[in-house]
Image 1: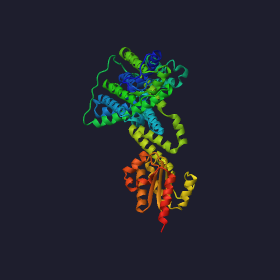
Image 2 (image 1 turned 120 degrees about the horizontal axis):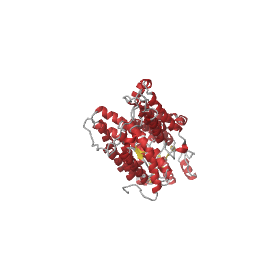
Image 3 (image 1 turned 30 degrees about the horizontal axis):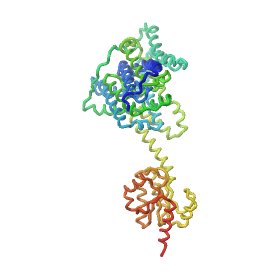
Image 4 (image 1 turned 180 degrees about the horizontal axis):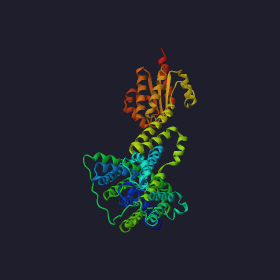
Length: 555
């Protein structure tokens, strides 16, 4: 496996234009997410540069653009609030330590080849999770949108203090926020390829603040302040035994959310470029990128859907586009950072608030209740858990419930494929000769037919069907259409065979493939059933069973 991403200069013009366009989109988003996280605008910019550069250099998705995203910002915001509350002096440094550790976890995910499994989540869980993140972003931007400081306590704190925030709202800053929202929602689609709406909203909001509102004496409009040009300071890992658990858990959550967010974006990139990404290589690259980002005081990032789509539409096809974007942003930070000092916080809040609205899965929310009340219940449960409890708890609970419901449906379907028959009826497909042999046995031969994967939920059906028929002399277990035999189902079959042999009945097994036979033999069934009773032909097994039954009827 190549260490670096697929970089070549055959598409230099398209890659450079893609990187330039993505950089224009990234600038306002990086500033907005940096401020929203509590780490500052500089941390957002360095996150966009470092994550973008190293993820592009080492990644497994050529056209992917990586940077701070909405889901990652939600997590890192909670991390900063938690770490600064536990240790005000070193809280921010501890938050960067969480970013570094999250990067190590992502590297481990990739090395363990977990990439293909991370996105194997039910869509209703993903939808609820992303919708919950969107709701969190909206609530957390309400205070700066209204010209107020964000109250403590997360979403619940904002909800409790909302009446006070509205009453004390700054008229001019709220007006700037509304202007930003209006530009973002009303921006013509035809102009998006020329200039991204986020940058237009940022420039217009800032210009209005510095010109039309420059003489406002009622209240000073809050801005992001001066960003000092130059390279970032090294942030060495900081932790102690008291906060180790806090750092470890938050890093795992950040790594999981970042991995899910990134690999979902990789799928979008694949569909647009008709390529196939390397998920495990991408996870390692994202881990390296976040490790370096945390080391230099940047906020965590992952694959960004909007920036990736913009890059591809502008012509970006190789990792050179992501590298170009990072270098362009580097030039901005090193030489043009002071120009950003007058950007109002209300404008950035409006940009992030619009991101929150876009993240909410409106299309699925409108249809999910028509699909299934169970699916709707999972979606809304995940949303509520994400917003009011914890993101990882939301995912774990959502996946658990979804899997339980799926297993229940599979159990119901698979239970119908367990048939215990003593006559040649139409419950299963038998040829004419097989039907005649089974009918000739006159109920003394029980054909136990199983079809499809035998997961653990089918065990009850096996026991139920077997116990329903008591009077027979020969049990024939037909496994010829069973590709997979779960441990629980294997134990249920073993129990049926043991009951039959204890009642001095003969047992014949048909058509067990190599894996199924191996599992049964490991359970010790080979000691119960003689070698000549393991067969591959159902007709031969039925004739053998008929002969045994007739022999037992002889005086």
